[in-house]
Image (cartoon, rainbow, N blue to C red; front, side, top):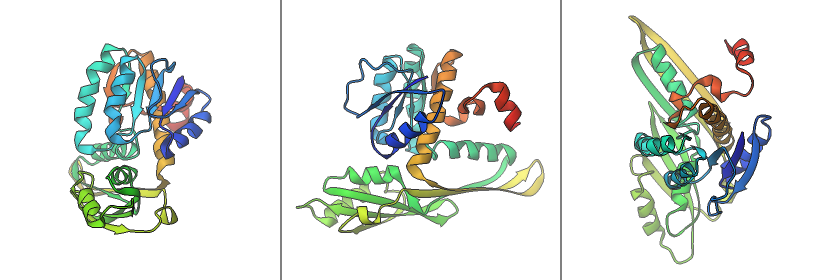
Length: 284
């Protein structure tokens, strides 16, 4: 598979490292988001870009017949993005795998599996404490913000608080910038505190984590308790899963299974390197 990586930030650099370790992948480009893509010779492109730039870039690449993988993370818009890219991917015989980070992404698969095992019950996804890349990028995009760090703090039962640290550009009012951040859709639905600091770099971190719980019934049997926890480096895990999804997209292209897909629609075996026979013997 010939893989291009678009975006040279934390995720792009981590994706490059992960892809270079994969014997079934040839990295053919690590591009800035404003580089020319018209002559790009790739089977699949990873879109390691801010979420709000993803749909447009995906459209451009799909029109070139290049399959895409992204980590679009606005949960409420995922289905609409999938529908918008579906016809374009089919028209150009390509695959677009959307929201392929760790949440949404790999955590989505865990939640789906938990719901299959315990059909009647409640699931709580508790993030952090740790850095949210999507929220951090959103805060950095606010005029007047020189640098930012958005920390997610679990409040229990799937509720979260946000603590945002910002450096201001000269000439901007903290109160005006704070109000703009609080209006942004990324922050408008959670309790958010904003603090001005002299140096975001001095407190920066890429650590994060998640704790997914589901309690309920299997059939008519109560008190089924499922639990999943991980502590991670956020960009590294996002990038690794995107590389796995690029592999899945390439295999789906080989089966002429074109279109746009979320991660819960993928076959787990397609995410793994190696021959199907060896994978089955190893994991079943």
